[in-house]
Image (cartoon, rainbow, N blue to C red; front, top):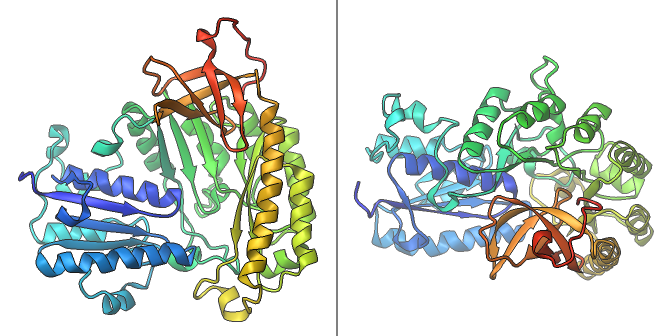
Length: 457
């Protein structure tokens, strides 16, 4: 293969996009391409896009516009557009808007690019001798491919388990762009996890727009609880996380599995979106603020030390100040471990865009966002300050600015110094400094005064 046959993937958005880009990288490298950091010099450029916020879509359009000049100079330069911007049925419109784009790929669907390359004789070689005997097209779609070059040695990996969503919250564009909900076969997931672990991955994040609905479309009793137990049985895997959960589908059986399986991190991501019942009804969420509060109590009953993260939208159409304050007071009362706060952004084709008036001024949205952010920082500073002089268990991911970094089972980000190569290890770290979003400490084994593990986070 010529060294000039290269690819570049630009990714923006959620963990699902990151997983899709990783899989496409594996497939491209399997058929003979090499990664390059420079999009302009690549043979193939893929933009894996997000449209949950207008800003993300604008960034993708900006990059597409910049690539047009390269296409004009090099007609054989392949441009592929992937992800939620393409969606399930936007390709014809996008082709008119961007006629110089060669391939349009729906979310999680790499086949259009692979078909394009194969039809033009641009599959170059199959590097893995064990796989050479297989049919090439089947081998490319295999769940057991080497990690991409730039992710060799990765400690963490995202693994999609539920694709699409059928819930249709009024603010959300995902059902229109990622299609109806569909669960991946359990054996495909387990094959992928085993492959990742054999290549050094020690923690997996199981992904779904509503991950706790895994298996419901099979109709055979398969559910997320069973999947978690099967994944936990994979030798060599140390930690499992899953996201995102919906308050209506988090069962006692699931929480019992989290409580009883040591590999499953006590870290729950369950989206509230609002603390006001009228706003929740307009969002078509299907529960009340009290239901969410009761769920938090139930989670804490099953998993007393659970780290609970949530999502909140401020400035939803029609949200009054008092309705917003219900969300603020909910945050204040529950003292959750992290709140992902976003300002409502109208997205085309959603029910909210078609039937509601985006009537909250941007400055009011920003003010409400800032109030929630300030409250969150105060809560996290109080929670994290309790960890000073405590010993926590950190799965080390990589080095960042000269320090090792990793996370506790509860998802807290920890930095520490050590001359040893700690990548992929679980290290007991004594916390010296605690901020709202990260912690700094020292390995317990290098401490002059050994501190026992009092509480493992």
